[in-house]
Structures are given as C-alpha cells and as structure tokens.
Length: 252
Image 1 (spheres, rainbow, N blue to C red):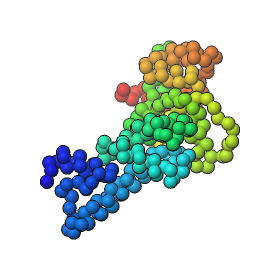
Image 2 (tube, rainbow, N blue to C red):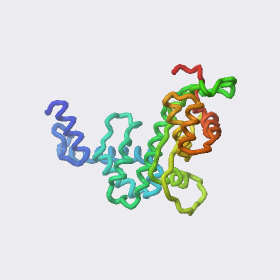
Image 3 (cartoon, rainbow, N blue to C red):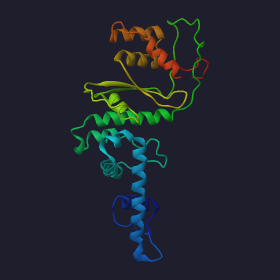
Image 4 (cartoon, rainbow, N blue to C red):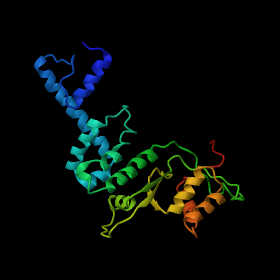
C-alpha cells in the first residue's frame, strides 16, 4: 500500500484518466476498475454541473453539449483546490481566452469574468448599509464613503455587459450590433440580487478613488478629469439605493 501523499497523487491522477490507483480494490477484484470508472464519471459530472451553475450565460452561448465537453477539459487541467467550490472557476475566463475552439469569440472571457464576479458578490460578507439620513449635513469635501464588499468594477475589452444582459431569462430579443469595450459594475443589493450595470469610465474612476479613501468631492473632481461634465449623482444614487454605501457607524 503506498503512503498517503503517493496514494492521494495517484488517486487524483486516476480521476483524470490515469490507471487505477494502487490500493483501490473491490470484493470482486475484476470490478475495481469498473467501479472506479463510475466514480470518475460522477466526479466529472459534478464538476461540470458546478461550472454550469457558475457560468450559465457561457453555457447558453455555446450550448449545453459543447459546454459539457469544454468543462471536462477545464476540470482535468484546473482541479479544485478545496472541497468548497466557491472560488473554483477563477481561472475559467483565462481558460476561455486560450481555448482554440473559441478563438473567434474573444468576448467569452469577459462574459465569464462578469459571471465569476457575480458569484463573489453574492457570497460577499454582510455589512450594514447607510440610511437615507446617514450623511445629512456632511461636508462633501470631508466625507469619505465606504463601499460594500460586493462592489466590483470590471474593465472589459468587449461589450460583455450587453451580451450578458441579452442572455438573461426573459430578456427581450435585441439584434442591435454591439461593439467596443464596456465597464461593468457588479454588486449585491439588499434583496440579495446581483445586478450588473454598464458604467462610464468616469464612474469607474470615481469608484476607484472612493475605495482609495478620497473624499466625495475629490473623487468627483477626479472623475471630471476622465469625463468633462460628469455628473456623480446617478452613480451615488445607484449605490445608495442598492445598499452599497455603508453606514458610517459600521466598523471598518
């Protein structure tokens, strides 16, 4: 019988097609390989289902059969490092970017980035949002906002926010030609929905500097450098209504 590290390595290799691991037996020895093959298939199916749950738009775009085959390739080369599958799939966007059959669809990686970010947002830590009167009388030049842990800004090379939105359940058909990069704002709202908003570069700059500790006035001024005439109010209203601006009394 091999030692534990050797057995673990052989067992893991066996799950992706290597010979039966030494020490794996059955009451009927000739059934060991057959029984292990069933287990190997169950693992592959489970990982494929986990990936499709995390990336449903990618599955819709490529079709279930193609996604299933692609997921097995991914799972064989990017095994989960933990039994908790929350973080598994972080490398899936990069995998899609380098997957030869998808070379004519470079936007797939950006769509996958949105879907992975939504999973992180959904599972982000809870934090108490600000109320409508939390900042009454505050001086914007001194006011420093804190954002909910779910808030993420993704600068994308393709119109992936629009592609993602078009492939949501119940979305109205839209054949408008899409082109150009987009910036996604991903967050979790108070009802535990995870919307995705397309925002401007100025909005993204403002969020970046709020995160860095700039005052509201300073962040708005820096956004003006990115886009002359930028109005910060729609962004602040969106964040406030979503519960993404934290109560100033909440412990940092």
